[in-house]
Length: 97
Image (tube, rainbow, N blue to C red):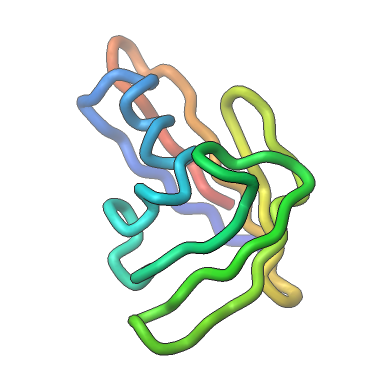
């Protein structure tokens, strides 16, 4: 089964990408993520591994399997999620699948 979620933003693509590509900012778009360790540093890199702290109590291992200038993909257990950014006029569109 495939699932896609798309979020449109009035912010410029570079600002949205900074939130998606910087592990330290993930809590700003995913409030269930309360902490992040690893993933290659300030920006996601591939391959890299890290731990996300869900809801402040559950540590979950995740692997970044692909990273480009506008997208990255990670695996959390058997689940694969791709995050990306595309220009949408002067703003940004961010589909995750």
